[in-house]
Image 1 (cartoon, rainbow, N blue to C red):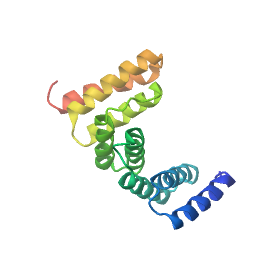
Image 2: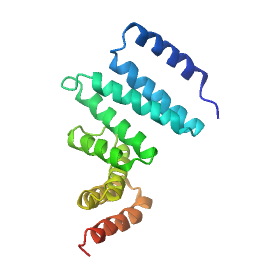
Image 3: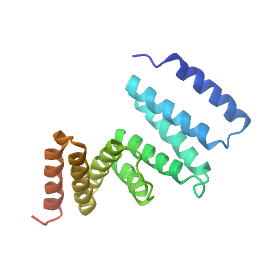
Image 4: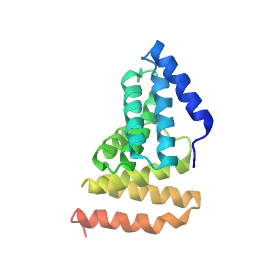
Length: 168
């Protein structure tokens, strides 16, 4: 698949804006999103690295006291990019910060996916209690949403987290 033509045009316009003022957090965030989409379309890990760089730049420039929702979104984006790169330790660190931000998820499905990936990254980094809690919460949320297909995997993953933690 080829990325939509307007992606390139948008990236060019944003790069022009950044050449005038490199301190625009939202411009870096949007470029990060474009790189993330290109990575999915082209199956290109280099694009994921570029997305992570842009998201990190946006986070460092963001006034997090006045933009807590944007901070939470960037933490989630960084977690997702590192997760896609297989860097579960970094993914877990960003997911944990997202979780601790206290910002509500606007869409329950997105929250459930977050909890599942947070749980996986916790499990893969040896944070078994956190994994258990995330898997359990995700299963409950999927149940409320009527999306039961993920629940058996989550229950098994929760059990694995307990077993690895020495509680079974």
